Length: 95
Image 1: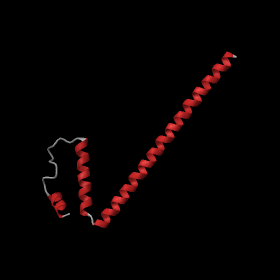
Image 2: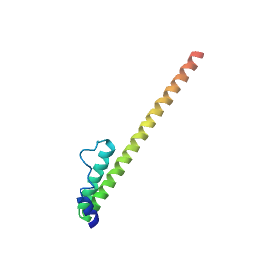
Image 3: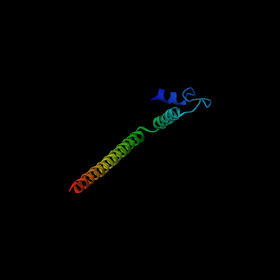
Image 4: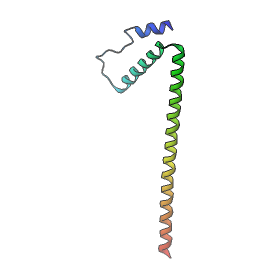
């Protein structure tokens, strides 16, 4: 743990301001600061934050999967009812 805190305080770890910024670098910088913040917390608080973050990610993933499933079901019902309506109209025209 002591070596990690030494690494965090080292100026070599931080990216220079002159580097061209892009989304990947921004993401990695944000992730670095997130881990830095977690390492500076007490172990009990760090465990709580990790469990809470895991719970929130699981909840968001579950809600996203539910939304995709409902959307796919709704679209398939629309397609099936549209095809059923068209075939019903063709039968009426033939009679």
